[in-house]
Length: 163
Image 1 (tube, rainbow, N blue to C red):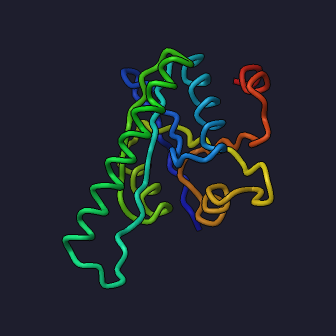
Image 2 (spheres, rainbow, N blue to C red):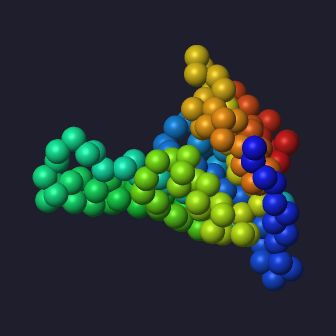
């Protein structure tokens, strides 16, 4: 059973809208929705990229380190590109976070560590993978904060009207 804990955001802090930045079309929809909600409520957008755990299939340590650095560099480039997009789109400079490990584990750890995260924003899958892998993880694990699931089929006009 998942225990729900009250997570009040202090008056000096702005509530954070957390989005998983995984490069999928669904994450772009979630980023747009979270950006507009943050803008309209004086909040902050936090973009989280989670690098998968290193392959334990006997990779040499040197090769593993090179692969890890390449993955981190790619994630940083994607996050900076998304940050510029959020800034242009909603006039907000988001926080950027990179973690390494299993997505569900790192997501829960990060939420527990940053008490100002108020809402996790996800978008459902728009195709055959409805509701989508991230939504499935959240449903199976349960989370200590509210989760907003935006339909992955929303148009830009609909996002702006809802946010």
